[in-house]
Length: 151
Image (cartoon, rainbow, N blue to C red):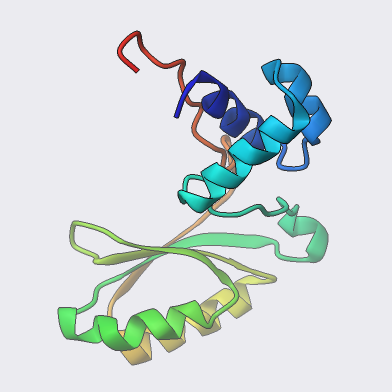
């Protein structure tokens, strides 16, 4: 990735709907050159996709929580397909520490969250849950720095 690729990625992380024309102006290269670079970034897997950021409260998902789950290694084969099919699980990560998985989930109510936690506990075992009161930094991209002299 050169300086222009980094600039394109930074702009698209802030606004995935930036037009080729706007990107062209920012990067000082033609729109077809921008399109070719974006295609290359997509093919290489650097750009994995595009999505809209939704205000969850506006669509009646008022409860966000992090649920840690303590799994035995043998349970992962059943756990991963299970959480992948639950639309309220917006992210799940295998982590180090006392709990092997941490999920970010959203639900309309604490009752819905409680039902999900009960199901997880019955199927897989011990959990620990933290309900989010507020978010000081929303999910964001990583700002790519300018390449060094060697790049």
